[in-house]
Structure formats: structure tokens, C-alpha cells
Length: 103
Image (cartoon, rainbow, N blue to C red; front, side):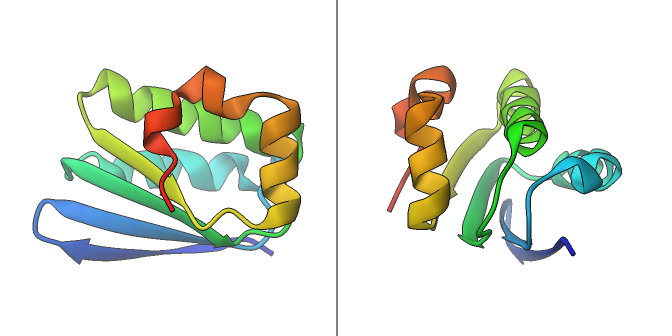
């Protein structure tokens, strides 16, 4: 089961994803995009995501690209080793830009 939590700090927000990032997240992601519209800096924390499939990767790419198009500063951190391996295989850092992946 997937859930998320937003922690606001002024114009910045950290969104904590919890659970599998897969097809079941599709509808929730639309809700997330709407909630993040109000912030300038968005930090996506994946420390509690242990599984991501192709749909989840597509959703993450769409989320980041949508936010970037709206001139938001986006960061991704906390990637677990299993998820990091998937990101390496598909070259996600090259797709989204290495600068958004922080420790």
C-alpha cells in the first residue's frame, strides 16, 4: 500500500513516499501534483520506497517534469539500494538530470 506525507517549511516542502511506487499510485499522483503546486522547492524523499516498477518510474518522471515545467526546484533523495539499481539500469539520472539527485 502506498501513502505519502507532506512536511512544509515555508515555500519548501518535503514529500515522503511510503510503499511501492507502481500502477496503484496513478490516481494518487494526480492529487500529489495538485498539492505541490503551491511550493517553490520540492524535496522527494524515497527512503521508504522499496519497490518501483515501470509505471512507477513513468509517474516519477512525469511528476518531476511537470514540476520543472512550472519552474519548481526539485530534489530526490533517500533512494534505497534496490530502487537505486533500477534507476541505474534505466539511466534515470541522465533522463531527469543528475543535479536533482541528492544524498
